[in-house]
Image (tube, rainbow, N blue to C red; front, side, top):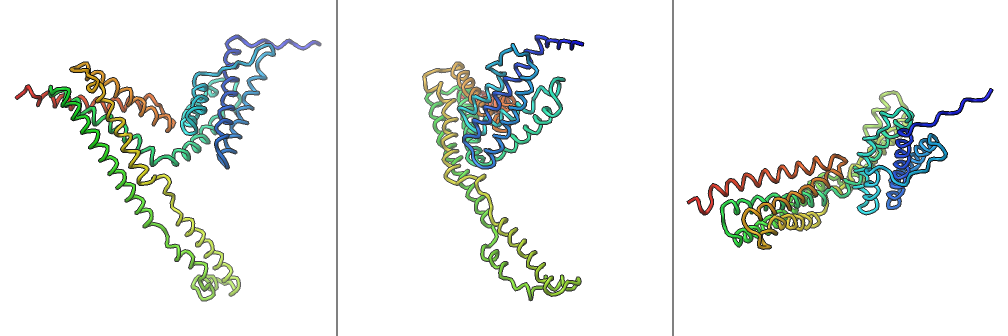
Length: 357
């Protein structure tokens, strides 16, 4: 008896499977690209992720009819991750890749096997761990850079709009903006230097004394009370000394591990100070630009608001990408904070302006 022909998938199924196939192939390529710049465990983990994506791609390829070509492009999100991996490196790409894995469509797709759905959930956690390690390596300097840029943008915008609200001349506004830029940059740099220096001193004070750690190995276990404890529990002298030696060896290993305090996440004093200075200055100069270029009145105010808003969206979005959360939400939050501060100071400047006396 002849077998019944297999029904051809619908056009909607074919389109969906082709998109999935392209996404899986693209993700495997991204993970291999990221692995090229890593070593050790990180490299191995990324290559294993790429192998898993290859298995997923094979599943979707097996469902497609033979006459259907493999698509060359995946979804816009997958292409964006690939672009980040090529141009901007490890952490940005992982942040966006993690969001992509979390938002997998496989949970709602009956054609995705349970093992594949489980893989995607585990992949999201693996990427979260890799991204966290990467963020930890840059957290000190990156924190100073982001805070510096945001503070420069918001504080100088607020200062300049206060002066604009007061109705002073462009010359006074520019001088005020430059003064705010310099004062804020030096203040931020000095504050970060003192903060990180104090933090490093506190970490150093918490280190175990190397001499005391080395002395553990030379304790006379035969006369030590620890061996007596084990003898009182019924062990003979040799067994008690052996067990005491084993316990002390473990204590020594713990003490040595505890003595290694990672200061990498804190950053260096001069690194964070210079980063804070440069990024604060870079942010603070932006609201000054329209006035410095000769634009006056409300036009200059709107130009300053637009430039600062775009910059805040960029810095906030970068934090969102790095943290694996919504870049749009982070950017809009930064804009709301900046515009809120500017509105308050503009109102105060208008109340106490040169024409109000």
